[in-house]
Image (tube, rainbow, N blue to C red; front, top):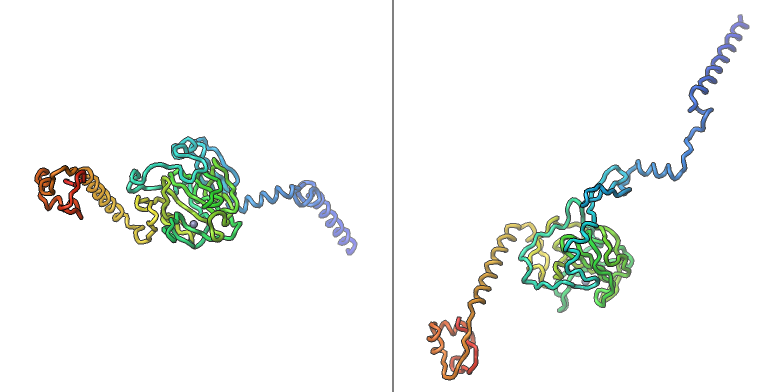
Length: 348
Ligand SMILES: [Zn+2]
């Protein structure tokens, strides 16, 4: 009995072994037939892993045949549109008053510019990146009797400085005051200036995107210590860069900025209170227009009379159909007893 049990046991064991053996041949993926790991080059595995993790790294830029836009693909399976710079090249903004390396190529007088101008700073295809995020060390405005046309943003020499908005480099040059200077012109017509750089890393004609490194911060030119001198200009006129962004937070204040002509004055500074008072801005525009019209009408109506031999102020007044008092009012400080021949008297 014991013997049969042993034989049965041996039979079962061997059949089990046999069955196992057969299974190996049926499933070639098991241990005996192939190595337990797939032989894939290490660097490929790494790349695949990174792609699956998706850190938001940009992996490709695609031309979607739209002409205006390009599609940027990221490794986290998201995407976004960017502008196709090729299309902007012949835009009048990048042609008119385009003088390479000039610190101010514009000629339009201040009073020819619009009273208020809505400027789109960013749209769905563009963004703002703070060129050097820090507290403003020295503000825009008059400083020790000189115009300070930008904000000073302190940094350590060698700190990367980046483009604030998309645009084209109009100047990459050395200037006595600015030191190493880069000027970028943007699609909305604004220009941004980056001064005192220790190194310039963009050339005239380069297209840059917001956040692209354009140089390293420093203290070249008329500078007392390492900082980025950052300017924002419209038609060559500087306005306080704090109107558009908070440099300490590194944030844009608004997507659309209402640039008032009064901001283009060396004494005009950013005032936080007026930011959200759109009604007041519109109301003020009407007031400005009315005042300008009044001044223009008054100037158009001004007439002068040239004093001749034998004239007296009362004779002149009578000839002009005015009262003596009216003539005196129009000519403050005039002495009626000391008229000179050839003297210009305002009569209207
Ligand atoms: Zn400065």
